[in-house]
Length: 400
Ligand code: CTP
Image (cartoon, rainbow, N blue to C red):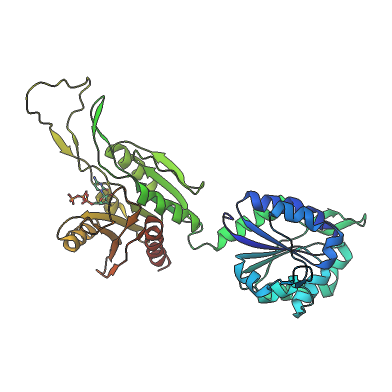
């Protein structure tokens, strides 16, 4: 969840600043881009060199750097930031933040920040308990800032009590839990299918199709990014999930995909069926390799179960069911037929007549048709962007 996030880390003058080195390392390890901003006092507790080495960026302390004539633009910095974390946050800085004072770069970044602001207090127990500090904290929380609560234990003064800054690992866990909680699909289980199915003819041959699984994997990744608990049922595919939270279940045939879907559908808030499921499967699978004989050869095929159709009959109020239609002619009429027959909330129509759409491509051009037959046609986009559009529609339906 911190992957690729731009984080401004504000460090104040407190002995807890020694923990900042580990905290920066953990943020960098999580894939975040970290820009450290220190108050002048903080540089007495930990050197900017340590933090710039770990964050791989020069540390900023002053508005103006006389040696280079450069100006550290606090507005640009706050616009760059996805998150602003002040850790350690001293009693002095918290008081200034609560009252809009702005006498250093860190405070200027705070006052211009539009992103989420987290602060991790660090101070001695009596400073922490003081009414003035508690008032300042309440005021900061009423502004929408989030406190990473301090711990209880031995303090630098030798006293025991509340006021210790949370440990770096605890701060990371707090951030992840808080970010996840705010995501639009937090706590929703969502089922996605992707890729082709292979229907065995004999031990060495199968009937398959050209689906790469790219679209379904992109949807699963996007849903996970939006906080969903995603189960991805994948037919044979070389794709890999970018989001490590996606739970992948590998299947081969339409019958195996049906079983896996039935196991997970009831507990799912939504199901997006993007797999290219075989419509027919050999009536009998030969136990031995079939030898060539006559000039012509025919296979007896039987229909597979329409998984989406079955899920449509099981769908409960509040569940969202999404299907795909890949068409070459009478596109909209065919898609609407599938939408209604399978009791879907919306269908994603791809036309093979659209350049850049279809199997194996990195792009797709879709039209979404919902159960009220409202149509939204999208431009040709990357499959990641198309996944975003589809997931936004899912969110719209889940949120009602
Ligand atoms: N689907 C399914 N089970 C099947 C076949 C398809 O769940 N046995 C799902 C696909 O994942 C997709 C949608 O149904 O979401 C596609 O509808 P379908 O009517 O099967 O379309 P086509 O396979 O393209 O078949 P047709 O020949 O009717 O166009």
